[in-house]
Image 1: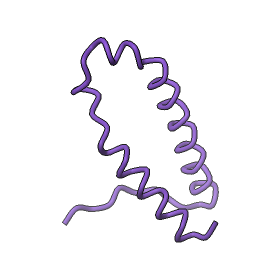
Image 2 (image 1 turned 180 degrees about the horizontal axis):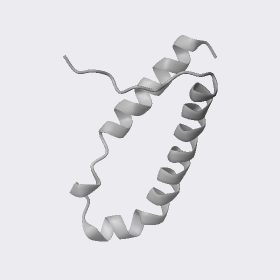
Image 3 (image 1 turned 90 degrees about the horizontal axis):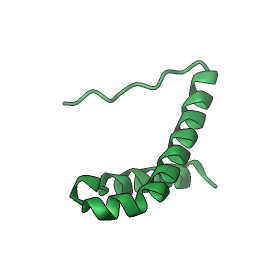
Image 4 (image 1 turned 180 degrees about the vertical axis):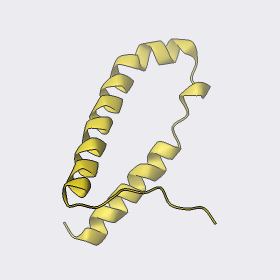
Length: 68
């Protein structure tokens, strides 16, 4: 997969996650889906930590973009 494809997929994932608003879910729905949500969040955290670690292992810093 090319670098451009990877970046496009990352941007699409960020966009999709930006649409998630569990505060709008009814309590019953959140309780029903909590196991799935927890699994997804833990997996996401592990992947993000791995990618960030690979960047840091190359001696680079991950910085928050400066807003205009």
